[in-house]
Length: 606
Ligand code: ADP
Ligand code: ZN
Image (cartoon, rainbow, N blue to C red; front, side):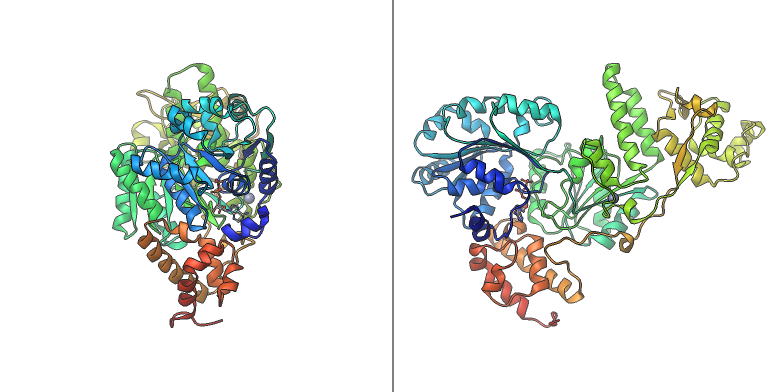
């Protein structure tokens, strides 16, 4: 069978995405390949299809034991004979799997790297033909990456024994050092490289000013993602627990997840997140690698992430299925202050701190951006994006900028004249000429800067201070003294040698104002009837998945349900036209879904 036919028959897709077919053809021809694609683009098909076409079993090396079972289950639901071997199985189970592999029944076998390296497994490898070696999460081979696995260094010792078997290394981690390491350590000298754009077109990026974070979050979820799965990132364990509890009290299904929970609770909560249809996880960064859930509809940051890299990774967990998804972040003056303080207090070499400072500045620059967020985000990773993207807050509204040179001078001079030990609230009071008790007792009403800033509101002055901090034109004290202090960069501003531009903080956008791109396929749910039907199909999917003990997305993706609800197929033939329904799934679930589409009062026909 041709790759194209397999794509349709087993996966139910009509066309390949960028690079998929080229990679598949290389591997079928017996050559090595290196695939760098962002999460959610479709790396797995690049080795799954050649495994079906080439003689023998496709061997997939993957560090994510917790995911293997789901991956294998998803393939089986598509009618593909896949197996896995890892430490979670009993001896008997493992033996059964080995039998199926040796008899030629299985097409794909997932193994953990530890298993691959064991002597007994290497003897086992000699007993059947191998179609290919797929090295998933290949960045684990690099000490520079964030998930170094020493076992990965030895993979090539095993594959060296099979010079005729093609190898394909896959990762979503982009940076140059890691990439070089992958090539070197896996000895991929002759591998063809396939690098995709890192743009995640279906994700809508938004950054808002924080005022009442819990209420803002609640409003966002309630109005845009009711009952849908999502991840909320916060900085501390305590906060994760508190926010989750608060959301529960608002009637939302939410659980916290952080490193303070015992391993059992962690596994259980992760499992529930995968299997439930609408759970919200409030997490610290401990909730990370291995969250391979395609239908996460939003990722919300209530606190700033650690860096742009972290932001890209964390937001990248939204919308892996290609359906519209939101990356929504709140930040405030106090976040900026907290981050700056953390940085200055951190111990370490000057060089290390300098890099950290640059990273923080890049992140704050992203938050304060006046232009397309996507352009800024991809630009950080060295990719030139032709703005506007029309799927971020800044592309949906004009963010005004103003000449803030004079305001900056007033704000900085106020810091200086009060002895560099006060924060935004007090400084703002002085600038607008507020005669409160504190001002009077400190005699700050006699300062030259008292009342010189009446042209701006208190909020606007807070915004000025925030942006000065973000741009590094101002910093914070550490240790016992609180408040702001000037930096080297403040002086050129005070002397009038440097012009400063500020953005006018935009009002938060309502859902309607965000011009979301409509995904090309499948059709979006335009009418109420289709939306109702979608919910009905979603319930059916949940029932089926519970009965089978698999996550709902293993049955059908949201996009497939969306298409069904919009197109209302009448028979199996029409079902098979829908993206994501292959022959096996049509056979297994077709009748149940057709029945749900065409019965019941709540779904009037067009
Ligand atoms: P990655 O490993 O790159 O994060 P996956 O291989 O899990 O991504 O694929 C992401 C999603 O995209 C999956 O749901 C997959 O079924 C879907 N997908 C992959 N290739 C195609 C395609 N050609 N057409 C439509 N959907 C696809
Ligand atoms: Zn944009």
